[in-house]
Length: 111
Image (cartoon, rainbow, N blue to C red):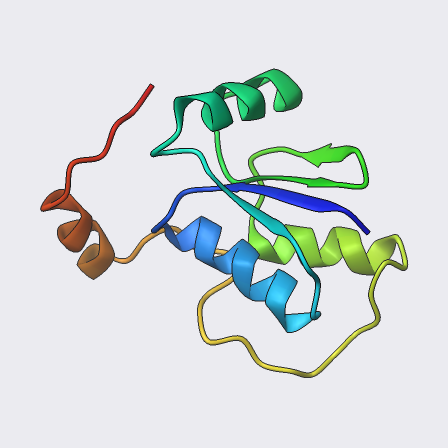
């Protein structure tokens, strides 16, 4: 299975997607859309919209998706089997107030 995950380096939604992919032991390309303009442009072109995370699984683009939704897609299409393994971050939530405060001290480029 080929997985390209268009993610922000630090984001609740992006971290939830990473957690689900790791939970199922899936290899994936973690594509930084914040620090690389070309990556962001590729995501927008492929997904047809500007919101992240976006995950491409074997050519199927899942746009503006949470980790929980990625897991539902994988399970519904028999790409993975259910597992009771826990994840250490929320899989369907944005950043916490603490994470937003931490990011406010960094320069973030929006395109």
